[in-house]
Length: 235
View 1 (cartoon, one colour):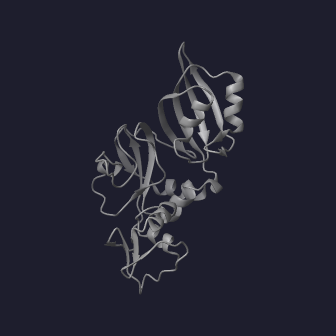
View 2: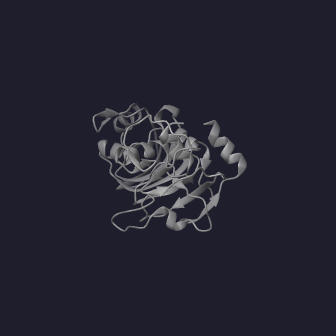
View 3: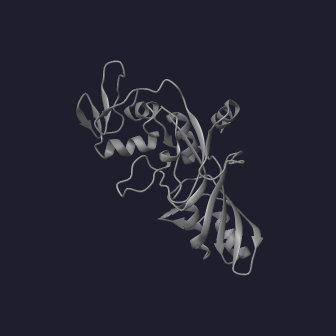
């Protein structure tokens, strides 16, 4: 199978993140560094290492839902010494990784798994999986600004896909917005809100598809139920 898929099946990272690892020269096959895409690996014959550690396929698939608190970065290691989201997960022996990212100051629903195929489908734009956010922003968007957000805008030299945005509550100097997107660009919701002149003050992801954060307290997590896993695989 392709090297990036094998890395994902070993629970190291999603396929997209695995591709980044290969490009960065962090992957070895039989003690030789590889940095090209599309290389085929035979798990029965080849020894694959990531960051000089041998990786092997995880036999048990794990699916976790976390209510991420502020201050944690969505990575498995951090050179700056910041708190990482796996610090919150105890009692799980399998190697798991986050599905997509949330900024350090963004809270809410974050999935972690060792199922690379599912992670790929949930994060790749072509599958158009909806992510829902609740944002507290400065001021109150007018009709023109809301339509601009819905129709897409140029961010980082690329137009965003159409999105959904509704005003949930209005106050004198701020408002609460209900936002749905199906892309996962870096800081996308915040950048889109800035483009319509209403910077985000607080941001929380509350759902992926129809799977909501429910009653999980901030900083807590649980394993997904079997029917929830099956639902995610249908998205």
